[in-house]
Image 1 (cartoon, rainbow, N blue to C red):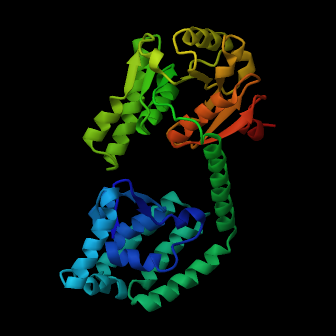
Image 2 (image 1 turned 120 degrees about the horizontal axis):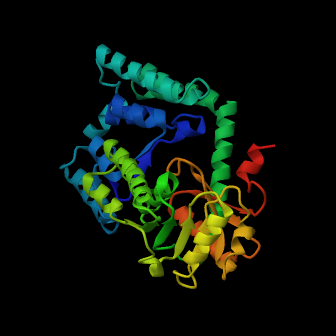
Image 3 (image 1 turned 60 degrees about the vertical axis):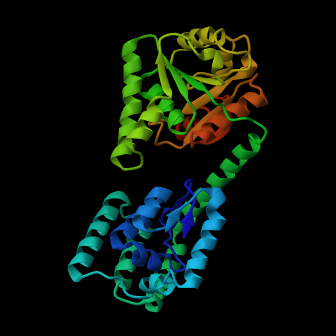
Length: 379
């Protein structure tokens, strides 16, 4: 198995209320060992190419243009006898190679982790762990039968139906966003007005996903708080092994804290995240409008103030809309894009493109009290 550097691979089925089928829960533990496989299957997680190579999920990582050539090279090795492909396949046909003590430790730890993270209302993760445990002492055919017996009941649960429904709706929303932005270039330089927890979170998310960002505030203390928030989130990625020190330094270097408007003439999109006060927001937005290009899009992270009201302070209200993030920014996938009375289609599309680039799920809503989410949550 060869992969390209941008690969993400895993078994996400437990996130849909089911468990891996078609031999997924049988082959992976026998390929990687129980611990690595249980971590991926129970959490429904995926891993990048380097991690996949490290744990044995793939056999090599090559550039995309070398993928076919690399696959042919492996085939030639198998044909010539330099690669014993039958020997590599054999472990997948046999019981798991675990002693009783190793099995007890692996599955007990896995069950404990599932109980702690998934809870009793999500049966798929614990069912997957118990099925792998029961199948560990069998060869492939009997293990596949056990997998099938566990999979079918899960597929008929209310939890599976609900989670699959959420997944399909999420794909529908993302499809609408993709259609909306098909002719729009993703912003290459962003800015955040107002540091602090929210501003730092937005700046981190933008930089983490590859869009450099200027973070402006009126005092050093707030800028320090914003940079500290971004650094804290990056250090968590480092601790989890998702990035190395070089990547951390590279991302943090694309967040530029500033007390003035230096560089704002290069910005494609600006989101305001200052105090929830209409007078303050209007003043900040009006001032910023004078510092950016005529085609730069401005957005407000307000959760309560009408977008059309804030737009009255601007000379180019067609370049303005709402962009409501939820806290904490790095964990909450939804972003409300609020269309004001004068917001242009291009403005909405640019902000949707930026939100999508940040890995968020943007939904476009009209300017009304509470927008969408708060309107649904409160009477």
